[in-house]
Amino acid sequence: MDKCIFCQIASHHIPADVISESDDVMAFADINPATKGHILVIPKSHTTNLFDIDEALFIKVLQLAKRIVRIMPEALGCSGVNLFHSAGESAWQEVMHFHLHIVPRYNKEELRRPFVSTPANKAELKEIASALSQKLGNK
Ligand code: AMP
Ligand code: ZN
Image (cartoon, rainbow, N blue to C red; front, side, top):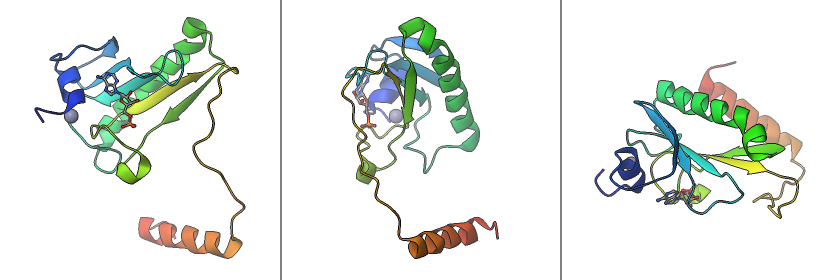
């Protein structure tokens, strides 16, 4: 994955403001922060997104995210945090190397939810829940 920008950050071939790093995962500052302290957590090995990431590696990403989020209020003065992940171009993923966004929140910025929620059609909810549940084998 020579051309992948996050592979190059993971291998220190291009610079980043690294917050934490182990053999498997890394956290660094987003170069276009949505708010002060916007951080990305990545697996170091190339994997595209939530559809293909190894489960054990995903847990390591989450564990590092948890450690970072825990210290953010004191370190940054934030009062909340959003975690988000885009999996696939249809979900706005631009960099095709798995990354989890940590966006600290401060009560003052003008961020808006990127989607509008509308009341569900109850019959459709039942159908969807049933289809997913059957596929999972949780009946
Ligand atoms: P996404 O739209 O979820 O794929 O987000 C990609 C994110 O990567 C964006 O928030 C970019 O600002 C960020 N980004 C892209 N290149 C770099 C870089 N070289 N260093 C840090 N963050 C980057
Ligand atoms: Zn990569």
